[in-house]
Amino acid sequence: MALSGELDLSSALLFDEELRRIEADDLPRTLVLDLRRLKFLDSTGLRLIWSAHSRARRCGRMLKIVPGTDAVRRIFRLTGMNERLDIVDEAPTT
Image (cartoon, rainbow, N blue to C red; front, side, top):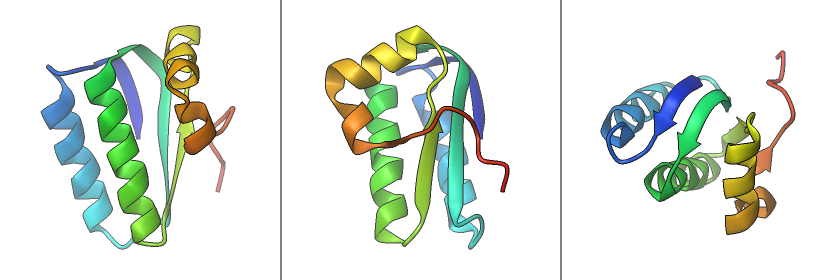
């Protein structure tokens, strides 16, 4: 799932609905959130990503995150989420 623009309070509902739609399917076992084109991420977006990570783990799935921009990487680093989430440098090909 590739995101662009801003993931904040104004886009949270749409993001969460789409993510849950994907999660309702049995596949894929690994979901990749590609944030390379994301310009802004606030605490609401971060909370939704953490919730998706937690749901994936409970269901035996994996959530991998390609953080992209320095601004997004900084948010993950400042909040310590870079230590708790599965951050990868690029989207897996499989």
